[in-house]
Image (spheres, protein in one colour):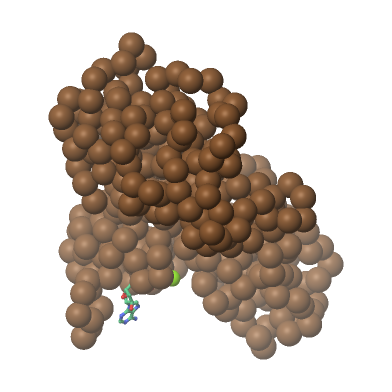
Length: 378
Ligand code: ADP
Ligand code: MG
């Protein structure tokens, strides 16, 4: 194999990590790369190994086996303070007895930078996170959001080659979090620093990432752009984790002129996008995104055109609304189909009232491009 022209900023190869006395490994043969300048997200449920992976990259933990490389160089034995990596920890650990300025200067002081250089870097970094002039305060005089900005300034002040962020916005209220997300994204673009951001929040990953690596049980489930993972997941875990979806088994039928195939999905014909290389008779799992259904009264005529891509027209899938969860702008409607399965359907709430309630008879149609399929059944 030809070596790549430019080594990735970060490369984990077959990394295993088992903590003492732990029943299961925290990381199980994890291989992962971040390209130079990339904004990479590690996404996964609690306990999936995200923090462990980040701490291994930062040098705060060491693998039992496998390789950690930064810019192509093996760093397994290099201590954290020699890796030139900035890290914001999950529970922001500002030094409470140091001023904001001293906190931000910490990395530079450890590296023996001259006083003037430290001062200039503190000013630069506090400007960057929009906290100019606060160097003299102590952390307890700052709000949670401001403390998190100081933690970020501290991680950036020594101009690291890599920035590691462990759920940096998890403790902020919703409004502040949304604001900080946009700021972080702009900052990352402006500085061009390779950044790995850990979160369990799929919305956060979809909104900010260049690429997302989804972890489960210490293993890499799948990596890709937000759009790839959302629209073309390869695993059921990713399909379910990235938003609301219903996964239903189906047998592939005849090929249609546009390259899709007919399939019987919950008793109704539907054109689906088959997995690469799949042929007639194969069993697949159809991934039906909740926001792409059309819900109507059973006696209402379908307003969507009848084409092979929306064959569940006519009466659609008949069913009964089982549960409606009001989510503000949208409602999650669970519809149990007469054919058996329950569909998860997201509907916008335009007025103040939720348009459906439990017990309503409905017809469900597929109102979008042919759905994506996963191989096999789940
Ligand atoms: P995440 O950040 O995705 O929530 P972690 O990397 O913190 O996951 O944890 C992965 C697994 O390793 C979990 O099962 C967790 O309980 C375990 N673990 C994490 N840190 C330690 C530790 N210091 N000692 C023992 N087990 C740990
Ligand atoms: Mg964690």
